[in-house]
Amino acid sequence: MSQALRILHRDDYLVAVDKPAGLLVHRTALARGEREFLLQRLRNQLGRRVYPVHRLDRPTSGVMLFALDPNTAARLTEVFAERRAHKRYLAVVRGIGPEHDRLDYALREEDGSRPKAEMPALEAVTEIRRLDSAELPVRVDRYPTSRYSLLEARPLTGRRHQIRRHLSRRGYPIIGDAKHGKGNHNRFFAEHLQCPRLLLAAVGLAFEHPLDGRHVEVSGALDATMTTLFERFGWAGHLPLDSVRESSCQSLLPA
Image 1: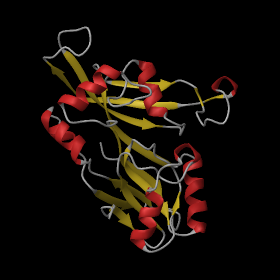
Image 2 (image 1 turned 135 degrees about the horizontal axis):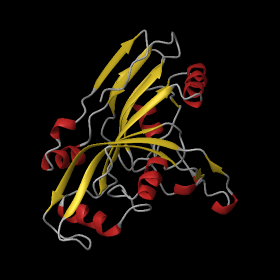
Image 3 (image 1 turned 90 degrees about the vertical axis):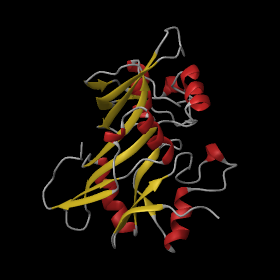
């Protein structure tokens, strides 16, 4: 039997859960052999239908919001479409990332329906901030030591693989990214640091509640893999905690 999903917040209209890394949100033609999905597990756990209103990539862990009825789903989908929802991610990347940067690179959609060259390039903006860094006395690439950063990423648009593609293009690929990352660093983390997965987590989600417009902020703790790595690298002070804050006026996600 699958382990119960961690519920971060629930009311009569919506529920926020912690999505495990490696779990698909729902059935897709690109993964016909899969038998387990977040949507199904949450539905079985709650004993009722649930409706996803945004997405997380399969290898990404973290905060995922579902509506509990079709009307709420329509309203929340509108909130996300109109950019009245704000997401906060933590990523472990190769290199010493910038203190602050705004990545404004248009991206072509990657839906697999037609060649990329035929897909239009769409606006994509991600704000990043370096929270910490570490230098290891080991040669993974061509240098005698290896440097890594903990970055905060806040996507202002919602393109597929946006954070992963933006950071790779900027020169700071996320560790564990098989498609956009660096294989030698991915292998080093998998074999020597017990991190065989994408080190990207959605740790914060702020949005307008569809019932009364109050501002809701949901924060989720990291899983055991990333928590252990943060502690090993001396980054424990950046570990997020499970929390929910509600207010009548808009505020910022916790730093």
